[in-house]
Image 1 (tube, rainbow, N blue to C red):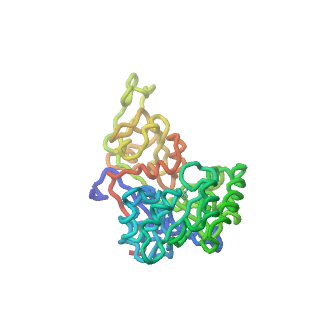
Image 2 (spheres, rainbow, N blue to C red):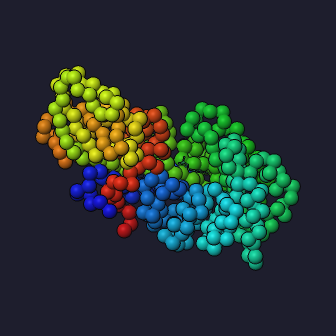
Image 3 (cartoon, rainbow, N blue to C red):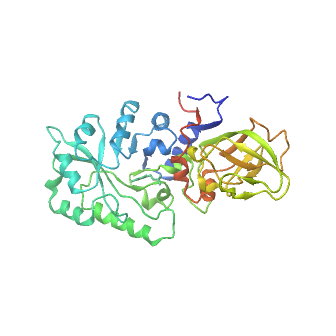
Amino acid sequence: MPHPDTAALVLTIDLDAVVDNWRRVGRRAGRAHCAAVVKADAYGLGAARVAPALAAAGCRTFFVATLDEGLALRPLLPGAEILVLGGPLPGGEAEMLGNGLIPVLNSLEQVARWRAQVRDTPLPAALHLDTGMSRLGLEPAEVMRLAAAPALLDGLRITLVMSHMACADSPGDEMNGVQLSTFGRLAAMLPAGAPRSLAASSTVFLGEAFHFDMVRPGSALYGVNPTPGRANPMAPTVRLEGKILQVRDVDTPMTVGYGASHRVTGRGRVATVAVGYADGWFRTLGNRGHGVIEGERVPVVGRISMDLTTFDVTGLSAESARPGAVVELLGPTIDVDTVAAEAGTIGYEILTALSRRAARVYIGGAA
Ligand SMILES: *Cc1c(COP(=O)(O)O)cnc(C)c1O
């Protein structure tokens, strides 16, 4: 593991900020339990650190995407529910069961395969209803078959009935009301005792009607704005800082970087920083992104290389822009949604692409 003092790139992850965001979402969700989605290694922040910090704060239910993600977390979360969103793949059922993971069943085919594992005691399972994503989940016709033949669920203890929203980041989209009523209608056909869940991060902010018994935020916990276009109600959780390797004076007619896409038009200075697309510093930030050195905004000039990015530091003093000086690339000044907009993507992709090469520093958390 690289040492933060000498590392060229440092990623600082604030576990207290993640916990604080979980509490903020929980307050919005009122009586509903606030679960945590920690798939994709907690959106790149490190599930092995993030999930135990949330469990210590009182989170009892965690969602991962795959069996392997669940297996990695199981020993770290004693007593917590871990649900696998993708459900069991053929051949993976016994391992899921043996390790106390709860599958989200997305089709009658998955329901049947999970039921084949039943021996003496009922097996826990969540049911995912498709109300408009056409991605995962029981289709309305399948829900009606279950309603007509409840024996298809014999041996299962349904711990959750859930669905997922397609357009929750656009509060005015009519799709939101359509999915809400479809969910109510379909869920009413299923066993009554099981808790209901419809809301991921943005859906929580659509209002109380969407909260049901459990909400399932992911991105909001990690600081992505769940209310695009309005002020971000979440705290930033990550800080990515690169160090300047070299500073050079440039003059006409020099070009900067691969493809000579930036041409210097006057006297200036360019700082080369140890961050590149291999660190999740997207190549689309070339000639578009920016960094911050001692509070001063410095634009990216030229293309992003695998390990290097060049910034125009003409406006800065030689003291500020010197080898070893720190450039904020993502953090309190440049939030994840801003970087995403400059890169032409969404905050989710920025976080999940975060560098595995950077020295990682965790601050906060119970330990
Ligand atoms: C990823 C996911 C979530 C969390 O979504 P965010 O928008 O990151 O809050 C919730 N539910 C399901 C089914 C998901 O796949």
